[in-house]
Length: 175
Image (cartoon, rainbow, N blue to C red; front, side, top):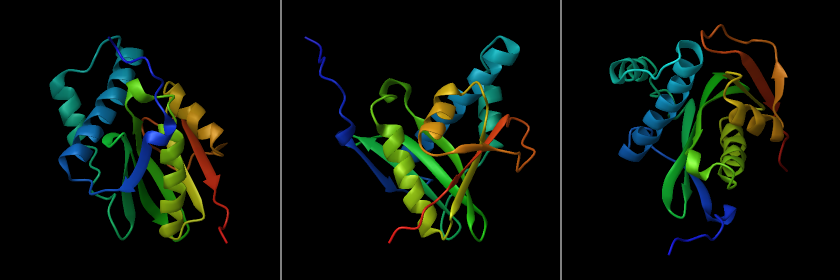
């Protein structure tokens, strides 16, 4: 008999993590393969080859998502890492959100919301009052998640080859 109980959002917990751990690297690889293959399918009509994907992953390091100017977060559902996000400082009051990923089978269970709430707190801990990010329009789940959580479209702040839309969120001061 299969378990048909709904996945509960209260089973999500988000903590800071070392970006070099095996579970972090596994999630980052899944993130990269997901977004890269979506790009390949949309623009080239095919999946990326393992060589192309591994080369792209190697050219997109996450080693700046560490203190003192960055942070990496892991989201766990029922104790197992299934989501991640990273922040890097751009200036004294602005951080960039990157590497946001929730495994497809757990999207819609509240993990993205929990992750973004933790992102806000992590950004504040870095002294930021603003979070910015870039993404692609075909990553519709991500765009919808950002808009639901207070991000608004802004003019381009970088010239990233793959960026099609830029968002920002102003953080309120917690008292």
